[in-house]
Image (tube, rainbow, N blue to C red):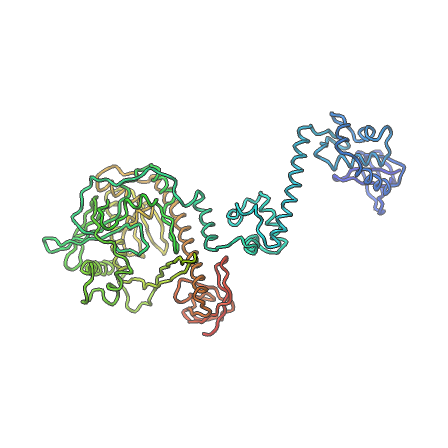
Length: 617
């Protein structure tokens, strides 16, 4: 006698060798013996032999019309042998019974298992839904295969075009487009990114990098949604000064300006004027919420994403020829550049000039600052402020060391050519140049003094502190060791940084004697700090990435095949003439500061890397 039985979810056939009430000793077609529970046996048969039964059942099962089988079965629970009799006629053979069982178990959408050998037909609605799902999967499989073929042939499927940004940066791995891409990439032994690059999906790496950043941090887009227009208050007193600003040529958000005025007692009044957008953007307004969402202007070569819309910037930027709202700090400065007193005021400040680095540096630079020579606009004011900056720097204990190595900063300018292409200029600037020092020292002083004033007034503010090399934002005033000041609260860039905007709101309350927006230990203030820290770090990282991209573009643009650099440590080399650090494979062990000459082999824009080798030491 032979048996057809179920074991571990699969069907088997064997010949019975020994029989016990609860179990059987059987031998399969390969001669292997095993013990089978009697309760697992579904069929007992004499003919044909097990191997023949299996092959005949398989052949019969392929011819069974599953839809008809589902129609003829009982709507209640049924046994497979009963359904075999209904389908094949009374007294079906063992192969026929096994064939029906195969047909049932291989079509689970038609039949639900209720126990060994017992099943129940799927409800008609469920079956229709399952069939539709199966058809959809078949269509999707066919579509995926077609897309994979296109990708392997180096072509981006048309259906991918609308969602390329997401596929490149934030793919939905449940979508069939991603599944097709991932399978094609596996087949090609490439990453999905490299396969798309090979297929021509990345036409502009600059745009690719920007798209990734925008998807992550500006998912609603970089443009501002329409907001209520803002206006500057007209009832503020107009300051009796003529102010001027100092900025790069590309700056549109002019936050700060300066003025000088001789006092009757022989001292000099120095005005540091900070744009006051807080006078036109009410707490809780739509624009206020936008600002607290963006948190900072994002800078990168050739472009920027502003914290405030241009319509608001135009109202409050300290533009020449206008009198704009400002929070001013006036310093009384003695002949020895000692600061004798200070006061703060809320007013409209007449701006006489917006000086630009490129125009002024030809006259006011390391060789000419503080020396006699030819005359130029604002010479007296610039010279006075430069001397005051030097005195402030010395009091902070940060006076320039003439023997210190020269440190450079770099400005990037991306020019669009007539043919639509772009060209980059990388301009080095010596750190601590007269104009830079002048502005930096004025800003350090105003941020430090206003921080002290807020602390003394016991008004909440956001401070920057540094100790043990770590800079952090906090609501507790503390020293900034790197700057050499006892207290430091960003307040000088309210058009560009949310922290400065928040601190300016608190300053307005202090000057006016009003209740401040934020109380001490305000939860919203702590939340703003956390959000700003995260966003500011991400924005700076993106700026660094884009500057690195344009450094690589510059090497290619200028056809620079060989360049020098200095070893930082191990195989890290800082390239001369640009803010670019490369990891050089095969670099011998050299002391830090060693000069090396490198040969450029290849540029990988997606990885933002240069493959190079050492030429000489």
